[in-house]
Structure formats: structure tokens, C-alpha cells
Image (tube, rainbow, N blue to C red; front, top):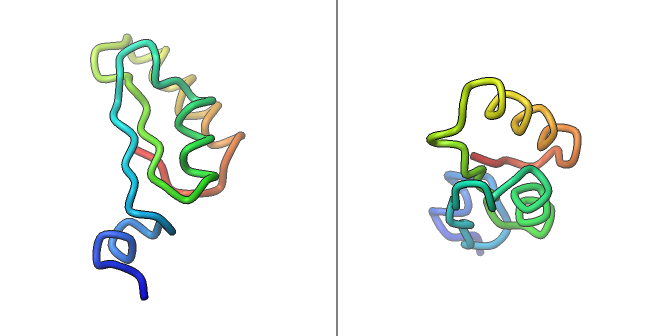
Length: 67
């Protein structure tokens, strides 16, 4: 039985990776998402160009949900 959190986020495991600036890159977020959790990019303070490129790279690495 899936938890409400998993159903709401469309993930398999109730794990949400914490966003860490300059550490939570596309490869980490995609790995967490591919493992069933919710990968999160740490781009809150990054320039828009970097955030956009990290989002596009993550989309290439996973078809799972990420934030």
C-alpha cells in the first residue's frame, strides 16, 4: 500500500532528497528519483541559466518526478 505522500508525489518510496546548493546537481537528483524517491535540485540561489541547464540535464537522466 502506497502512502499518501508517495501517491501525491507519484514516487515509490517516501524519501525526499534535501536540496543542497552546488551539491544537489542533476546527477544526484536523477539518481534519487530513479531509485524511487524524489530527487531535488539545489538551484535556489543559482543564476537562471544554471538552473535551466540543471533541469534539462535532469530530464535527460530520468523520466521520474523531481523538484
